[in-house]
Length: 355
Image (cartoon, rainbow, N blue to C red; front, side, top):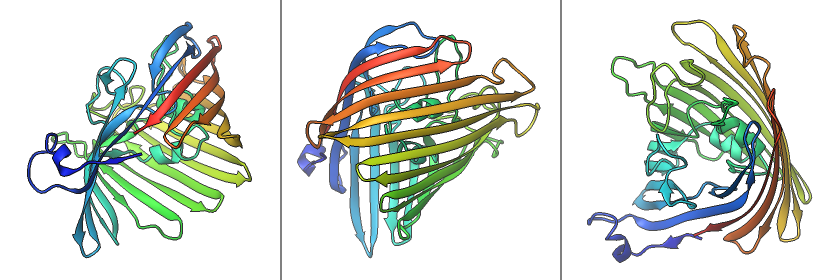
């Protein structure tokens, strides 16, 4: 639940002057305890942040400019509730790496400037039973979470789930269909090709929905990394995904297929390609849902390398119980296997609260 902040309360945070209407402070804190072991890991007892949703906080606001035109802003950042640290992880992360954008919207749609969602984010998290869980969703783990262990396993998608220095256009809703066009300026002097471009779409029609994205990534996020290296030492990634959802009474079934090719837009030959598919479902049970999901990723490389033919499959089973509209508790079991490495099994109990 978002709390509307009166101007007097905001005055200490926002500089004096004309205040936006409907300024809100909101966020979410998610914490869990468990025994975690992804494939190739040693078992670790943890009290971690961000089991079902990455913990975040921030401010949003809007102003009616008249004539159907509205201005809005988002300033939100991730944090780790287990340690009180800013960011999703230590290192190359900013305080407001979730959102830092200003936008204009009207009958023409919406145009935003700044740090905003990447094209891959919505078609991935909307179309899987575990949503935006970066700890337990098999699809999200494969797509966006590298393993910093001896396996050297890389996430599929380059460019992060948010793009900085971005112009994003969202179309009006056409009978349940919306689309987003994304352009990130690379901001490297003398190298205009160092940029990201992409698009996605979402279509909802009753219990059925479709989504997908396409992107060409040549620049790292949230901050610029080594120019010419966005994934596995390659200078660009071209990827696409198609996703779908079908509702059957108390159950929703989700399916996804993604292909990503990493190569060089100029210079050395060679490539590394991944193919990922996923199935998941949520089934209403009491005041909560039973969640189940599976994802499979396989790599091929040219020339042949140690990564060629390597596979990962991940299965998660869990239950998410709603205590209220703002608070839920969950229990998760995860099974994870990477070629040539021991299978990992994880167990966790957590709580998520929205404010």
